[in-house]
Length: 171
Image 1 (tube, helix red, strand yellow):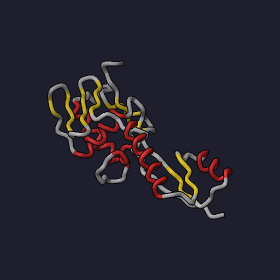
Image 2: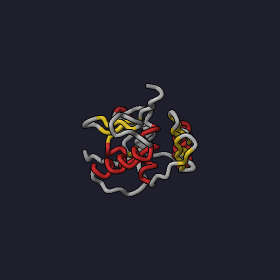
Image 3: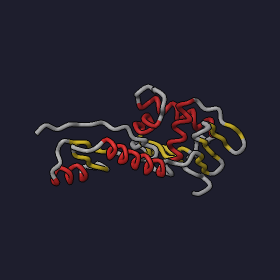
Image 4: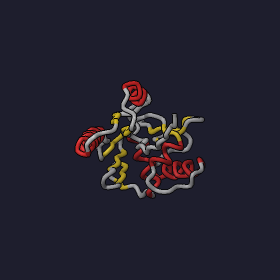
């Protein structure tokens, strides 16, 4: 039996991703194996185009309902993803596109640690693929957020894992 591998692009900052399998194998055990492997839906041939379109529209509706809110707030930091504006209090932060994407991903993660690789994927820009490029962007972002280098501020380094956004007012 020949295996096919498919790559999916996920929004790592929000864990929103859907995978549907379209296949010529319609046996129950194949369907169960596909769903157990992580597929959201398993569609064996033959199917009508209308059925496929209805299933895809259902996925789009479900994913849209899971899409994170446009404005994310933590303490005095707010990020508007739709307008691409970040503020500290009333002051607008002048961020590069990569810094904005990293800040938005960290804030949407709600305190979860994001790896450097996840932060690279979260950026819609083409960044240098080295781990150090993320470190440089995070360092610049910390400076612009006013973090004190001698203490843990908004962005916490989690050794050997990545970064996490902290809300100092909640801790």
